[in-house]
Every structure is written in C-alpha cells, then in structure tokens.
Image 1 (cartoon, rainbow, N blue to C red):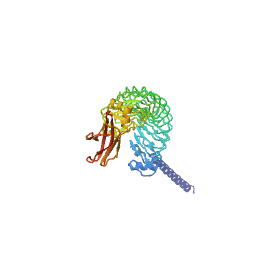
Image 2: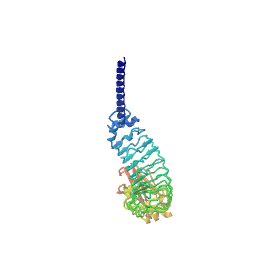
Image 3: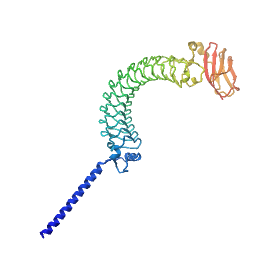
Image 4: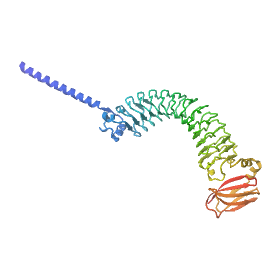
Length: 456
C-alpha cells in the first residue's frame, strides 16, 4: 500500500511541475507579445496609421513597435484626432505633422530624434518638448497654450506660436533662432538680445511697450503692429524689406537707412512727417490715419499700393513716371488736400484712385496754384454735364464764356475738341463708339477739369 501511494504522489508532483512550467511559458510569451506593441486608444489616430500602411496589425487598439520604429516622417493632419497616446513608440520620428486636429495634451519625451513639429490649429493646453534637443522647427500656432518652455531646445531655428494665451516667452537660450512669430498673444515683454541670427520677427497684437532690436542686425521682416510702442529703432537693420508698425503710438519713424524696404505699413499712429525718399524700392506704402501734412513720392517709382486716407495732407507729389502701375490708391478724408501731382491727368487709371471731391489731379505747381484761387474755384463749380451715361448728346452748362472741351479715349487718343459758350452747349456724340472717355474742360485761366464720360 505504501508503494502505490508513493507512486501516485510522484505522478501528481510531476503533473504539477508541468503545469507550472507551461503557465510560466504562457506568461512569458504574453509578456513578450505585450512588449512588442504599444497601445493607441484613439481610433482616429490608429486608423490614420492604417491608412498610411504604418500600422500592419489592424484596428485593435495598438501598434507593433517594429512598425512605429520604422517611421521617420508622420503626416496625420486633419484626421479628427484627440489623443496622440502611442506616439512614444515612434522613437526614430524626425518630422511630425499633426495640424488641424483636436489634441489637448502632447508628451514627446521619448521622441528624441524629432526635428520638426507642426501641431498648429489644435486645442493644445500642455506640450512637453523638454527632451527634444534635436528640434529645429516648432509650429504651435492657434492653440490654447498659456506656457511654452523652449529653454532646452537649443537648436531651434523656427518658432511659430501665434494665437495662443502666452503671457511670457523666453527665447534667450535659442541663439540659432532665425524666425520668431508670436503675434496675437498677451506678451508684455520679450528679450531678443541673444537672438542675433533673427531674420523674421512677427510680434504684433500683444501688449508690448518696448521692443529692443538693437542686436538683431539681420532682420529682414518686422511686424509689430497693434502694440503700445512709442519708439522703435531699426536703423541697424540694413536688409529690412518688410516693416509693419501700424496701430502703435509712434510720433516718428526713421527709414532713411533701410534702402531695401519694399513694404511699409505705418497707419494708425501719430506721424506728422515721414521721409521715404531713401526707399526707392518701396512697393507698398500704407500710412493712413496719421497727421501727415505733405508726402513726396517722386522717387518711389515702384509703388503699386498707396493708402493715405484720414491724414492732414495738403499735397502729394506722385510724379514718379510710373503712375500706371499703381493699382490701389486712397487719399480720401484729407479736407485740405487740393492737389495731387501726377504724371498725366488724362489717364484712365486715375478713375480708380479714391480722392475727395475737393481734391484735383494736376501735373505742375502752376495748375495747382490756379485751382486754389477763388476766381478759378468760382469758374469750376459753374460747369454741369448731363446726362451721364450719354446716349446721343451731352449737355454742358456753364456761366464761363471762355472755355473749351477735349474728349479723349481711355488710351489718351483725342476724338473731339469744341469751344464752349456761355449757357447750354449741346455736343453730338452719335458718331462715337460706346465706352469710357475723358472730358477735359479748359478755362481761360488754363485751369483743367477732368471728368469721366460713359457713352452707351
């Protein structure tokens, strides 16, 4: 009996050991399988990876680590992603583009190879990039960040963090920074003394009272509008081509050293004088809503866009030989502006230039002086032309007995000349083709009045 009991006991012990060994093997196998995958709880994130043939094991809430480790560039923008958990498996990732999603939290501490991150237009509240020492370009605009720590990103060259809730931004350690865009935040101060390689600075729509760019000699673009600046010195920026200082409290700006300036926006300040005679390459000039009295643009023959509305202008000299390339001109709301000096008063493009009724286009000082005399003013207001548009005949009524009319096509070709007598003058237009014409009326004092005529 003892023999059989011992044998049965031995068999039982052997079976238990087998079970234990098998169980351990199963546990180890499961652990090994688990170690080869990383959870991805956001199905939109995982589906995007499947669509790009990155996740090869299907929509099951995880990704094979081997799949993730093979990826250097990941484009998952506009995929309705709210959670990027699982991004830690992409240990060799260099370029991550996930803009236009709804991500609120992002921790990239395991993505040590990352060089470019674009997560603009999300709902970011927290971003951890403290371990990303290789990061060169960071785009986080249009989020909800109240804090952004880039102190450990020593290789950073481009930083775009516009449209957030930042009260402060420290870029002192980012000495390689060439582009800094941080407009539409709540910044009251920003120290750029260490960023000597900076080429583009957009810091408008903040609460800046001071902006010191004395060390930023390489700046080519500056946009610092909509702040509280009362002084800004940029004379050291010899390569400056774009300057926007609109919506500040500036009483003066000096652009005499910026010979490469192409675009100048200085509207909505307190400027009374402005010399742009040293900026021959200027193409866009917006200086409306200031207190400017006189503007000389005779040297600026590349101008295409000119806005000078709501100033105290008395004269504008635009005799630069290239008036025809100006496609946008506005000098309205300047009640004292009698004369704008232009290349040719008979050109069609002047019809699209916005001016006050009391403002006239003239070619020289003599014409302007004639316009300002009280006698000539009385002559001018006595002219009346009707109907306009014209079908057959144009009636011109005047109390001035010595005047004449010249009619030109939009190309400056004369098509009709006639003397005008006192009273009503009826001109026959039946032989003329339909279109736009210019009627030039000349008085005995050689005063010229130009009106647009439409013939149907």
